[in-house]
Image (cartoon, rainbow, N blue to C red; front, side, top):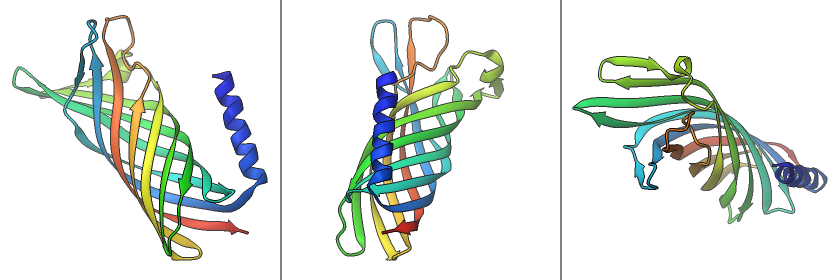
Length: 207
């Protein structure tokens, strides 16, 4: 972790020195979320996807364009669904997420496709489980890890409607690497989320 923080700090310092353009953005996320279970025998099982949502703010800094560093802060609702003895199970986990990614974009006219990858950190502040007509507050039960860390991989398109703004369409894959369940039950559970992101960027500094 110490090496990772040093590397991230070095990237941000380099970006500050070589900055060519700064942007801020707002986005809406349509999340298709599930949990990946790994039982004590190592067998993997993904629960049913459930439709959730989120929204957030983004700061982007270009350096030696077309390379850029992007940091974000967002609210994201994640979860999964399943069934048990004809009763529907639904999980709803509410996170505040922060992420940092390194990206590469290519501009052709007003269109700029891009790819990015990096890390995210999520802090859980609300966790609900519904089994049939019964509701359980998992935060009160203290069975879920409040911290979640993982990898974010993104690809998308931007359309520059002017020198000062652009529209964003992006797909994201969030791969959780943190065991969500507390205790030593022999099984593991991780977040898996695919999201469609719609947003706008506004240029705040351009050399």
